[in-house]
Image 1 (cartoon, one colour):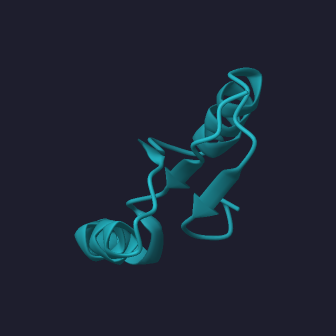
Image 2 (cartoon, rainbow, N blue to C red; image 1 turned 45 degrees about the vertical axis):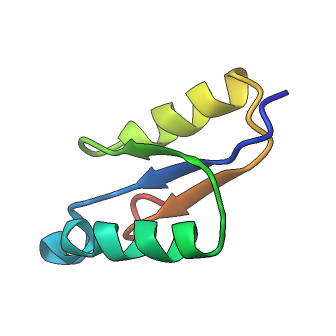
Length: 71
């Protein structure tokens, strides 16, 4: 099992503001000592593929961040 969570992040959410805020998100997670694997979505349906890949790799926790389509 993979103990480090996977963060699926849609940088295009919020008309691109999510991408602009990514460094802030990463800084906040780092301040709290959280480690994770970051994967960025590249288009519609990609988050589902990324979540499936993470699960197949044994990831126990997948976090989705972005718009409704990402979740």
